[in-house]
Image (tube, rainbow, N blue to C red; front, side):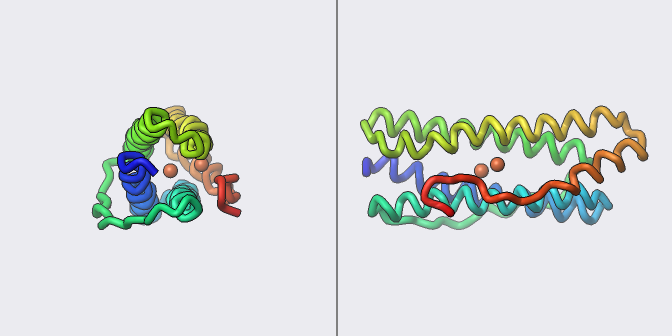
Length: 171
Ligand SMILES: [Fe+2]
Ligand SMILES: [Fe+2]
């Protein structure tokens, strides 16, 4: 594998594990602030992120490229509101999208077409991830601070079911 592509893939593994850490921290804040449903939603997202990281680990293993694990940054644990949790999650996903796009560009430049194809799943997944956070922001905003409406939205988030995603080389 091209050295730059390999470096970016390893960096992405760290970013996906950090995403898991960040969403687990958000799930904790939400739970401590009595948003039980939203906390459950974020906990499901935490589990998805673990799989995103593992997908890249598995891909590198399949192509014989060594996996290099780095130290994880400490996630923040205090947030201003449930709205700011989702806004920060969206900002984070936008960062992840930019990072995935950067690897695709590097893989294309290196004519590494298997990596380009592998990353296809991640490119499309980012559309969904950004969409999810936008829906969450809208859901909180629509409640306009009314406790009953917010509780109703929180209960809806609590129904999210973890379903393993069709990540290449996983499941
Ligand atoms: Fe992810
Ligand atoms: Fe997802």
